[in-house]
Length: 185
Image (tube, rainbow, N blue to C red):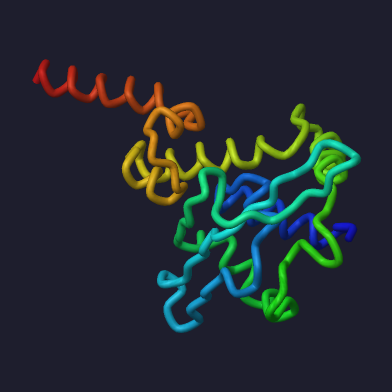
């Protein structure tokens, strides 16, 4: 199974905007999306499995139930993903979006991402930067609300969210400045 062109674009969009690990994004199935065409705000994505990538040639990658810690998470579908998928998702009725005969090899996904980053003039490599960037984006959009961010991301440990959130220190500094400004008045 080889990912190409539009499949890589779709994978990157889902991974970034939903802030998924590559192991979660690769394992997404058509039935995991519940797109509500009447009320897009009710659309959701259930992450109920992930890929365990084998980095050895003598072992195959495989699907496992749940994501990193075995849990299942339900996320709201982020608007950019909703609008990207609403006219494309039906092409994948009742199948995995990124797994065909077998699970794509991690190094091929990593190399494709790295090449795309280089073509775009970005200094990144591999796949986790999209998870990291997506987490930072959601955290900042939530106004630095760690509870909302952790619910969307499926992380229960606040320290994990903070590591992903570049803007955390800036949000904290801004909040402190606001408090000082109020005290001075």
